[in-house]
Every structure is written in C-alpha cells, then in structure tokens.
Length: 305
Image (cartoon, rainbow, N blue to C red; front, side):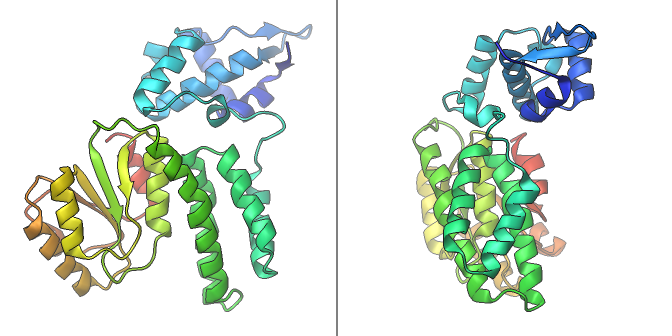
C-alpha cells in the first residue's frame, strides 16, 4: 500500500492540512501511520475518506456526525444525497491526474490567441473528466470567460474567438449535464434553467447547471433565448419548483418579461435571476424571487436548496 505525507494528502483530498489534523484530533476521522520521524503518513483509503468527508460537508453535512463512519457508509450517504452513483474519480484526484488550474487557464489563453482548436478541445475534455462540476464552473468557466471578456474589451481577442470558446464549452460541459440526466431522481424538485427571449448569452446558465449537477439537483437545461409563453407553459405542466433566468437583458425588457412570466405561472414557482434587477421590479412580483450577482453567490444558495 502506498502512503503520502500530509501535504500530498491535503492536495489530493482538497482538505487543508490544519483541517485534517483537527478532524483527526476531534473526531478520529482517520488514523494515519507514523514514519520513523513521527510524521503522519496517509494511505490511499485515508485520502479517499477525507475527500468524501469534504464533499459531504460542502453540501451541509456536519463533520461531527459523519467523521466516525467508515468509507462504505460515507459512500452510501454520498450516493443518497447527490442522487448519483459514487464515482471515486469525481471525488478524489490521483497523483497522475491532479489539475493545475493556473496552467490550464494559461493553456486556454494561448490556444485562443493562436486559434488552436485542438488544444482548446483537449483542455475542455481533460478538465471535464478530472474536475468536479463545481470546480469546472467556479475554477475554470468563471475565470476563463471573465478574462476573455476583458481581452475582447481591450481588443486582444475578437468576438469570433469568444464565440468559438463558448461553443466548445457548451459542447463539452453539456456532456456533463446530459450524463446527469441519466442519474437524477425523477421525483425531486425541478428547476428550469434558461435566459429570456432575445438573450443569447449562455455561459452563466451553463455554469449554474454545472452547480446543480454537483449538488445532485433535478433540472432541465433549456438553453438561451426562450419565449416567455413557452417557459410559463413548461413550468406549469411540469410543476417546476423554480425557474433560473440568466440575464444580461436591458432592464426594461427584463421587467416586461418577468411581469408576463409572473402573471402566466399558475404554480407557486420561484423565480431566480442571475444578474442584476432593480429592487422595485422584484417587489412588484407576486411570487418568491431571488437574485444572484455571481455564480459564487448562486453556489452558496443552491448547496442549501
């Protein structure tokens, strides 16, 4: 059996070294071996357990209530809460597949600048397979398109380059979403994800969908540019719990869309908006409404939903 020091165990599990020590001392979460110099040595099973504990605490489980459980019991809890089979590759990285996010982003930027579609495809495929949906969203998608937007504004990248990367992101990350459909409990609360008619921007809603995948929520990704009548009809027919609208739409146009949607929904469907909306517009709505100004803010919300 292979053993690793606490620094490597931290990198592979995603748990800070100080937290590992605290979980050992307070909850006896793992029982590492000791080297001749008394330094801790963690087995691959120790690292996997730490990784599962970390993922479970991310979705609201109390470490004090689960730290004493063995790995098979934790895997069962993980499967139940996230509504998908346990996959070790998704939960814990291996030494050979640890992703350096900074290097990945540099590769993306260089490939975009030189129109290297093969490299772009490779990086999307690699990160899709190695990272969790949450890491894909917050550590790849968000910083990548933020920087692309800045470079387009400075004239360093063209709109064509931006659209090319967006199309590849939609293709590869859409595969993560499609795979999730096969594993989701059909009885859970349903979220519909789209943008208003005329709004073609879909990176935000793509990221939101990845977060829903990560936390095991049931949703339908409808893509961008959905007419309000069609959205209301679908939400009513499927008894949707919430509608998530990613919107960069001009305020008046968004207000009109929201007013029509609000009036045509017959169910108690919440409306979630990714973007900005005036407080007065939100107050005029007859139903529950939440606004998220970033995917990080949405992440904090959806993990508790």
